[in-house]
Image 1: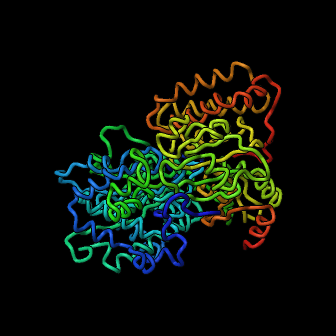
Image 2 (image 1 turned 60 degrees about the vertical axis):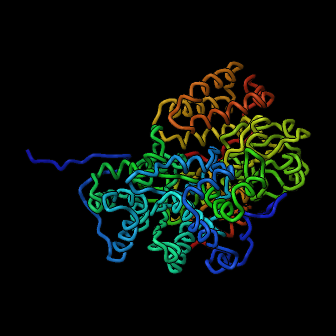
Image 3 (image 1 turned 120 degrees about the vertical axis):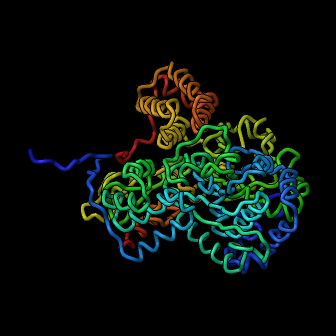
Length: 437
Length: 176
């Protein structure tokens, strides 16, 4: 698997190939914690302004401007403020945070401490998905190392700034990547999302002001303090600042984690050259560029279309950046089968809190099962589109929307894959070999 | 009439008043989790502590839940409410080695069906079952964040990536 930067100097991936890159020693030899010191000489407002100027947008999937999120935290609130790192990376196709935490855990701690300093917080939690147990161990070790060096804990570096960093584990729920569900889970409850407003910045963890940021978002913060917000933004485009990690999986010769400047031109070159093209002499059929929750793109929407790899470029091309989980699919894949697979995912991961998502995803799986086993009807395409229309925008959180988008894109863009099933001419090519649970 | 002790069920688990007890070292570990959260927010430690219960008792059982309810000043139903939401908590005994094969899109298109078939055939069980010697349980799970090295499986907490049927054989044969 490849882990490298293309079209820019590695920033997020600057240290990942160094030996013992997870240790404090190596991190400090490579300017580690220098930017925390610099930030602590700045005023909190100046830090927030640099982050705003960087146009850093949340890397977890929603793409909300980080500086703006930080500025929503009420400064005059007497309550304790919390910084929570969302390391519940569960979006199908996404695995970038895993390598950041595995190989550069101190960058995450430094980013959290800078955020804590800027927002006057004394407590940070890193909420990691339960399956990533080995990463929690790595983070715990890194936190202890930092504590021993007076970088975490009381009176950091001799100042009057004190901040604790703790790890916390999830237990296998995709929904806990949604920030309010994550907070419910961190409080020990079922991972149900909460009504917004109030937003977490005002009432989050323990009803206190809370900022929830993705791992990649927080590891970008020290870089922004180092370079200055405007210089960091200029690595990318005016509206999509900096660099972004893309987790590439599927039928490419060189899957991996790639760091690209925002606005990288173009997607065809990225797939065909940087990722080595499609395996085994096959042809590109489609791309899901931002994790399973975004619209699937046809090969014709990519080849020769000069799709720019940034927020605006992908919207113009009919999809979204999402979490950057870039799934490449060749012509051996049946889109009905792949969409059924993702629908099962959303059904399994729907938290059950609200009816449109809980019942809707369940019925979608039933319909897909019927179609796949030979019971397709021509009107099913419209039936599915009507059903997802009753989920999209009508569910409590974005999980319902995500399920809807994955299916809408597939039905509208790959009718030739659906028609044989709907006309009763085809049943699923891959029969389940084992009994499903 | 003789009184009958109340017995009720949640997710097929028989619930009684029996509470588990743990060694001082385990209690110390539990306290270290508790110390991460504000003293009036003990419930936050629930999920980390459930993992300790699961490790110590093999699965999250009635006695372990009763212990946690007391330990965290919660109602027993509060604990069950959380336990039953999360897929990583087992409510009944499973094999010593929990083989969890990722079935989501990237793994599926890269060969998960062959891996699943191979594992099941090798162990002689269907997905969701445990071998008669209680050594292995096979589950299909959703995305484990290992898409670039698909297909993959997790056994216990260990990741096994870039699987082929030969590699699966080597891994399973090496398990004690």
